[in-house]
Image (cartoon, rainbow, N blue to C red; front, side, top):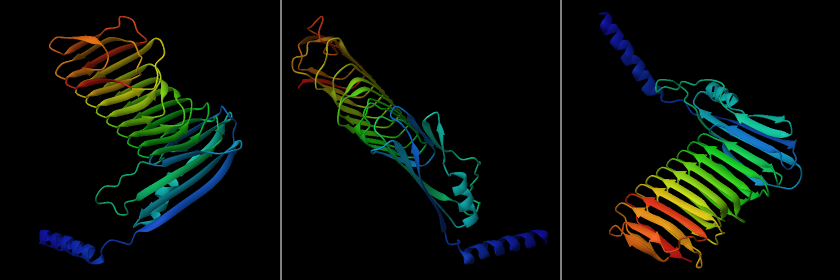
Length: 319
């Protein structure tokens, strides 16, 4: 009898849920705009979770910060609490600016919980020329545009993409699965990229380059100096507009192909090794080991080149 009563109760509850249907979703919004004084050479740190970050360069000696946040749920109270929990804080520290928006509460939204929250956020900054940037997001994208001058930029994301157009001094990007797309108006002093599966597309050149990726493809151009590429299965495509004396290029890849374009008059020394890939070179050298090893003719040149790949083809072109 008790089992029958319980069964009827569950059936009634399920029928009621079906008849009533889901509650209409409500949206709670937050927007804030503030201005903070800052000077060239100072640093702006943005440490946020799912927020997308947009940075533009403007005149003056202040940082403009605009925050927009939206939370949507069938439970308005839950949406409001969720939004309040993720509002960023902004503070100045010794002339620098720090913006943080990390959740203060652990949320458990299982499939039986009511009022699941969907949220999106955006932080837009306008900074003066010469201000260093340190951007850290989880799933949010980073977008930078403008002439930052002699400023350094550091972007760290989990799955967010990084898009850059403008100028700066040094660029450091660390991402798990996000892509890097950069088009610069002048060469960087240094470029360093570390990514697991994200692709790297870079235009504008750099004096020194270090790129480490697991399965992402690499395509860079306008390089002017030493470079190191380390990838598991991604392809590497790179070109140099010029090389200085004592330039060194190293490429290590497991199954990815390698295509390098070097200046016409470069004197190239070094060697290429591949387990099963083919080697094609516009630069003089001597093949051996049934074409799996290639030694360049120059014993000492402007450029020392070392390439090691397991199954990828290697193509070396003159500009």
